[in-house]
Length: 302
Image (cartoon, rainbow, N blue to C red; front, side):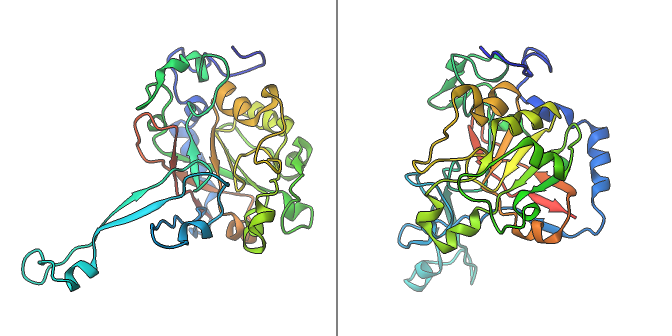
């Protein structure tokens, strides 16, 4: 059970999409007005997978998480070794990619990703999250997200390249930058991915993120998605864990209680340098039935 204002039942007893329901055709059309130049920026980290090189370790990730694996079932070396082409002169390369999104890639969390008690968002039984996936609130319920994006570039506002690891962004700091409208995607820049190139150990020493108060402030303003360039929306300590109690855990506040999908580990440096507070935000997760999350490549259309 949840014990604070929440969105359970707001969009009907069977709802599995949460505040994405706010993205009506009228809201989407209005959001498209935020594009003025047509420039398109990718907000995703690269996915580097390999079984025989350190490539996967060169992209920011949380310690202890399974890294992407990229296999080739047939490649140029096979033909050089004598494999028969498909028809006269026709060759093909084919690959397989295994990605565990949480903590390793730019990804979206489904509403079934975290919960407390015996119910996921909207009162769906947690027992419906099975070994083969979730039969309620899986990532396939998202579809596509087209919305007005609002960038909260907190370090730039404070005159910093990135926030310190112990910084927890307050609601007041967000309010000084912008006030989102219902259906907006709140995009939070901490600048923390910049630390990776300087020191992996520093990157793993903790992470800045939203405070619980800031998360509730965004929920009260009916954002459809909260997206951040850190690994957990909220901050992390040196053990890679949140310091908040369950009552203030950002995943429980946003995913579980308010049905607000989360996108983590974005790359926001070009968007921040563009100096734009609002833009068109576009993202679509893979249609993984029962998935607790999916890699995504969010786009900002300026």
